Amino acid sequence: MITAYTIFFSALTLWALVSLIQSLIHRRSAGAVLVDAGPNPARGRSMFHGLFAIFFCVGGLAGMSQEFDFLYLSFTIAGATFAIAALTNARGRLQVREKGLWLFSDLIGWDRIVSHSWEGENKCELRLQIKTLYFIKKNSAPLLPIIVPDEFKVPFEEALQKHATPSHASLGSELKTD
Image (cartoon, one colour):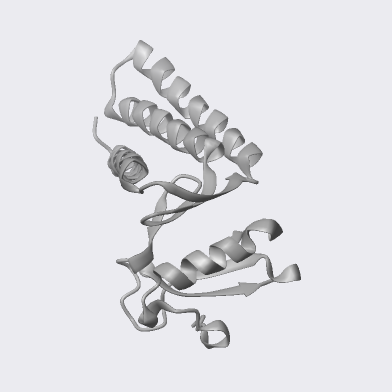
């Protein structure tokens, strides 16, 4: 029987599959690694999320063993997809690549970076303002905070300055958050 839950989890499953496929495509097309700043500092949390998602997968399989239902099927596929995505993120690295910044499991292309600034203690928190499909209005792009190890701040700044076009250059205090 198809219910609202089934439709919701089916849409969630489709979104998760598309996101996972996009991440795999980006990994292959991101270009050579220019700077490797190390593994995901939140890898423990990502592994926990991956293991938690496996429970959804196992729960869906257990439900399907008794009777077939699209809800159980979508639980199984969504759980497996989210587990793969979370475990991939846990194994991810923070890197400067030829075509953009690799943030643990996805590529932020140079053309998507609107502005950047360094904030936080020791100015080691890189805040990127990026273009997305959801934020069309000027200065409404989301801020993406990234903790960059202190020894990699200079190479990251050099890469941002080199690869960013003049319209994408660092705006520092002009960074809007409305």
